Image 1 (cartoon, rainbow, N blue to C red):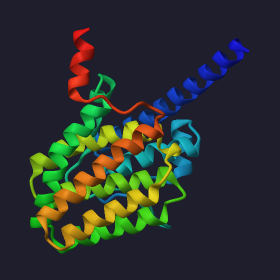
Image 2 (image 1 turned 90 degrees about the horizontal axis):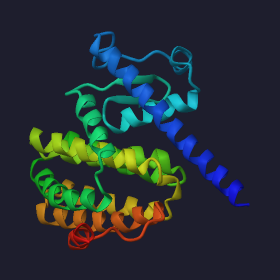
Image 3 (image 1 turned 90 degrees about the vertical axis):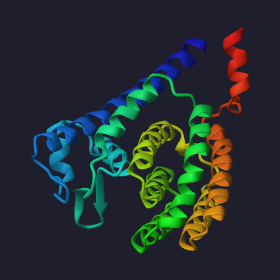
Length: 258
């Protein structure tokens, strides 16, 4: 029985590892297309069946990679039209760098501490500076989140897009670059656990409150709504990963002092 359990655990681990490797294979392939100038902002990628054949992977694995790049803002899928390279500043290099940072040991509690410090203030700036276009994009992502309540992986893509839009709405490219690093790590971590999500509706409602505060140009309310959302997300994501509550910085120091 113990042997069977070990084999089952190994198989699950191997499948997860293989899935991550195939996702990064898609990321690297798209990166190479952009680097060689074969695709430019606004260009459409080849059809999924052609890409899957070129990479010798399944279409489901290809879609996972496209979902990753979509969440990072590198690609954008349009229903019935295909997948396009997003216009605007490329985010691929910063997202790749942040994935390396994740591999080198960013801890969940550190991620949330950084997000609380940075993103609550970014939301306040967004409430001051958001344009009508930003507000419209946020409204669209909130609507897509409600539409994806039964599909956690699709929900996650729109969740990350929402936070990227808030960062852009803040009007500071340095803060936006920092947020790219954090959102890349967030997506990479949560894509492995989001299928265990319990209450995405509550999360969607919190995002709606942030959107409303930004639409109303109320910085204080936007900061408060983002703080509430992140504290809720911290507990929810710990449950997704079947983890104990993340340690506080003091607890982490105690661990290192032992």
